[in-house]
Picture 1 (cartoon, rainbow, N blue to C red):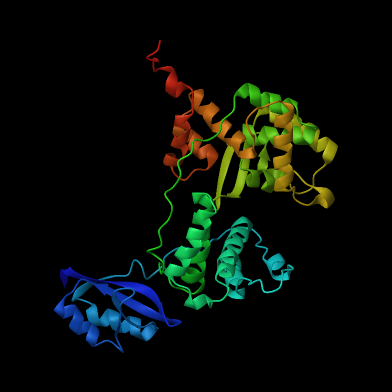
Picture 2: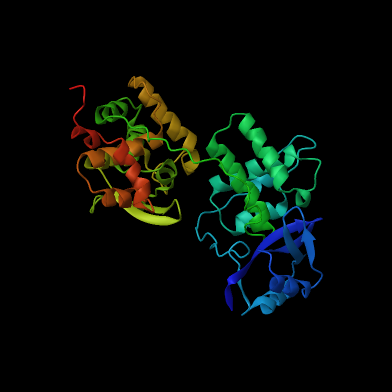
Length: 375
């Protein structure tokens, strides 16, 4: 095989028909081999040859070029695993909701694929919302007829509306999910430009401010919620999913099950929080989840956010405080007290220390050893 010669396979949609795109550097040998493929054509738009996308044709491509030139499948095949989370995926409310006339709904196969892949409910809501924004922006065109230029026009519209880079990236993910996962064309829109990732420092408040927020909660239930968000470094969704048996009072640990990335982990349990949790349990008697709303259902994320914000306002904290600010503060205060970065990574459930390293940019001990030139 001549390793200097190569072809790269792509997914194309030509006149609403799936095609195998074949990109290559001009070469007589490759051109002659392509002429021998079933019904080869040339696309000026994509600057590559293409043939109908069938299993038989993919096999012919492989047999034609095998041992002659290198075949790059990276943009054609997908090896991403299916989400194995045990979370119950609820897409029924999308099917039953009331919508305005002429509003285009996402296709049933879009919902079905999200359901079968067991995507988190928050992801389901995000993908459906953004994909419907996209298809209603181009409501006069069939889905399969939409191409890269249509996506760019939509993204340009979002940017002109002054939406954040994160917002635009979520829109891209939702659109790519339909064409690449639902229609089975991985990396079809590989040339779509993404906004540069924003690098923002985490918002952190002091220990004194944390204690003041706890003191300004309305009741023992709200007090325990704030204590766990900060004292265990929990995400809001992780707090809501806690069950009674996830509190290990003998080992002073909190077990977090199926968190971000479908990972389990253990984190710290504060002695102060445990004492208050015992008082809370005696008064409220939760049955399944540690924090339950009316009729024993899981507590809502909106309620947790309101609890934190209200207590922070009562404590006269000038900055806006959210559950994630408490998590950021937990990590930063640990780092400032000398806890190893790797240990903090484990407690937070980060997949890489690179994610945890952001806290070194806001920890006070990062700056204490530096002498100010003014002084």
